[in-house]
Image (cartoon, rainbow, N blue to C red; front, side, top):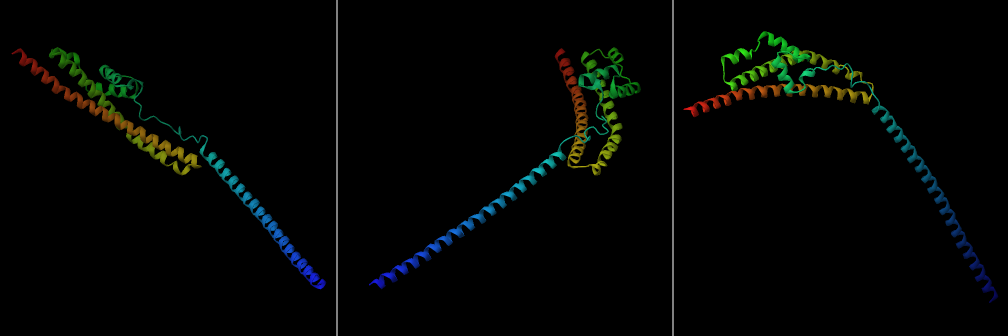
Length: 231
């Protein structure tokens, strides 16, 4: 009986020691795995930080390329569209046409054309007593003079504007960085927009001439109506 108890005790101790050893081994493995995970985590954190720093550096570099002045906004600027201070609105233009001259390039062109074909409202009014016709002659002659002066002035500038655009185009290859390239592109776009506005101004002059021509029909209709009413 004693021998059996001794055998059972030894076996129990053996199995307990084996289980304990296995348990400790698992703990050691878990600790090693945990340390490995921590190392991987630290490594990934370091990689993420390095990537973020690289991105920040690229953003700062991009900001450096996108800020500041490159001088393209005012590079060899020339105003080809302005007619001068005396042509700020249609009333001022008509006033210059009435005088036969004025300030600025448009006023100077009016003076040249007016000398070639002077409009003489006084002579016309002496021959025609109808006030409507007198006012119409004055307005028609002023509009014709303004339109002729504007169209001739713009035409004379076309070749210079073409050369100006070509000069800006030749600067495209000279853009030193992204900001300079964008600024130059915007400058060329602005010059194109100014030319479009110049075209719109000519369209407005044509519409004005057409409206004045239609006014003649209204004047004739009014004169006929008055004549028929007298009868």
